[in-house]
Length: 158
Image (cartoon, rainbow, N blue to C red; front, side):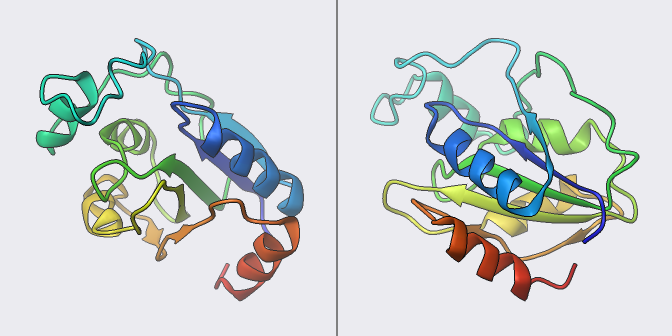
């Protein structure tokens, strides 16, 4: 496998655990996607039409600020991008991260955690943020074991 990074956004720690497991299994570098303003429990209340996450997800052009774009991805061939599913898609902060980097010639592979929904329209909405990259179909990795992660990665065209 070529040089690989696992970048992830985790609002509550669930996706972070899976990202660490994935990075460990494939020997990848781990990169945390950190918002400039951390999300609070109130921000994540999807039942509140005025919560920060609801407002951001209602506006597909929303690009929450990053604390930092993180390290340059120049040396990586493959970038796994992890996040919790919000409103059947990736949180728009993931678009912020992807758009902060030159992904030309890279393979981007989404993975997600979810309390109850699938990947929905995730790839469709991430594709414009992955200019020049080959975007593979994403996968839910809820409570994925090391073996199931290894099996999945072995099936990928990377």
